[in-house]
Picture 1 (cartoon, rainbow, N blue to C red):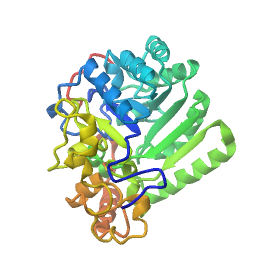
Picture 2: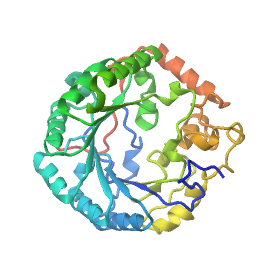
Picture 3: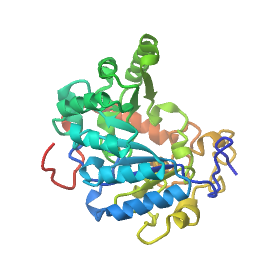
Length: 377
Ligand code: FES
């Protein structure tokens, strides 16, 4: 049985540690790299406040310690403060993952009172025009204002900036802006190609040269900033040669609850054809985690094919990402094609070649279909 380090147990007897609540798929932004499903219209009927509270309670009883309130845009839920307060009372470490749209100084103060511990703010670019291209909406000023308010209220904050061909040349300016705002952590996360980002892959793929240049700029900034800011630079899978240990292994430590209560081992899994994920309206969360077929499918290593099965690295990366294997090869039990040992690695290489041969033009980005009409941004 594969083990992820000494404390993790991938046989289904371990506990979920990290709970992600996708409170809603609604969002006023239309980001071309959005990781929400591309068929939003088919997932309505959000859980009620009482149902979310039961989920948090049940997961806490199973050992969950950290909770993320995410979406879509979680601030669109009017009960966000109430849910945060409940999570805080239950003893969770609470994190809000937001675009900043929907936040106000008053709401931030109320979230602080409710016990919110940490905020991750999504950010597109150091310049308003590029931010508009990527988000499909004019949102730059609002985000900057909210970033400054978050810091003024003393929240620890991660500024999360998805990086693609559209903004990779702005890495030095983004770092400068983040330092000026006073964020502790800057995550320059190269876009991974799922859902809307997969739709826009040809337009978003950076060149290897651009990645190398950005990496060098990050290294230089780390030297200059020292302890003032920690910068993460996440390379896209397609250029890595080795797959990421996605979610620390399927059904290992992570639980995502979709807006309608469907329980997932990761946010992307809903898009996997042929898998029927149970929901909290019909099943007990403990049963879903320990017993359900979908959560047990890719635990351990008995599901693995070659080359993963005999690979010396399988206990570090678990064969990579099941969702990426499914999306690119049609079989989630294949090795993640991001791995250079995968028999399907050529799919990734061909995708890179095709993307870089495409004339990249921000006008060709396909905006996320919001699946709902926002009243304001
Ligand atoms: Fe689902 Fe990697 S995103 S397993």
